[in-house]
Amino acid sequence: MAVCTAVVLCVTGLLGATASTAYADDPKDPPAGSGRDADDADAGARHLDDVRKKIDALYRKAEQATDAYNAAKEQVERQQKEIVELARTIDRTQHDLAALKRQAGALASAQYRGGGLPAEAKLLLNADPEAFLDNATLARKGQLAAKRVISQLGRLQGDLQNYSKAATDRWERLEANRKKKESARKDIEKKIDAAKELESRLAAKEKARLQKLEDEAAFREQQKWLDSGVLDEISDKASAAGRKAISYATAQLGKDYVWGAEGPDTFDCSGLTLRSWQHAGRTIPRTSQEQWRQLPHVALRDMRPGDLIIYFSDASHVGMYLGDGAIVHAPRPGRQVTITGAGSMPILGVVRPDGDPRHHDADHVRDK
Image (cartoon, one colour):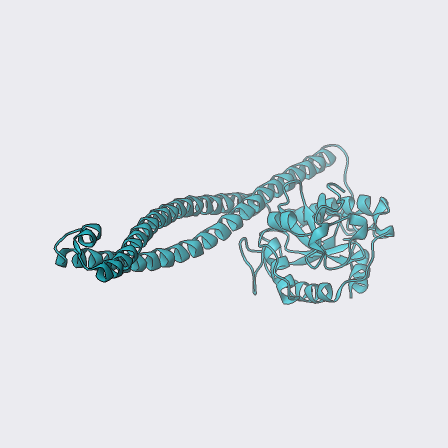
């Protein structure tokens, strides 16, 4: 399947190779004139390229904020679970403490009923030798029991204070992460709205040209990557789990990118890889940055279909390698899950969800 996909993409010019003419001007377009017309055309092209760069920068920043949002969301969910468990522990400790207080109260009552004399004094006043020995044993047991109760009371009260402090700390961190999450969400919406507003100013023809410019830029980067001979050593043989992950990912083609989305109808970049590998029976981290940090690294030359390629120096984007120099990924807001060249963006490195964790520190490529 990956080979057929790559052939189709080569024909359409998305993966490079022989498709170098794919972005030639439409023969139906009028030839560029001279003088003012040519100057206007050049100015228009520069303007569109500037717009493309601004839009790309805004979406990149939104993607970075998306990763921050996802990370904060994960922390909030984890801390909520910790707080629930702490509450249960506090409740159990309070029950144990109440039982011990009742036991201590019973000991105090027994002493009161006995005239308030300490056990040692009663022992000395007893004239019967046999009764003296019996009372000595009972007194010793009573002393040990009282000490044990007092010790347990002190320990449980200390535990309760520690648990209460831990719960307070968790709540404070939870609120801090909620604020981070909300701030990241607002930042994302601001960047996406700004990018959409820029695009909305363009006429239909300019939007088509803008898409063409984006494709051309991706094509040039992919071609440079292929020209480096990178595919000479890369295998196109996927693992059984990798094939399942690829099957899921490619079944999502055409679905919209939505930040923070994990499917089944919309995805962001790491949401797509998360669900794809869950389908293959593997649980991986939610964000591209955590996927990069936690999953086993493999060298680019050892990459195989199903592996995840992490992009940009901040690990803010991820795609799944399909073979033949192609990836499937959720690109950005306003775009759909698609297949493109693996070298069309700066590669940070490659991770393998079904790899050996001991190989986490394997050599990896930090740039294409």
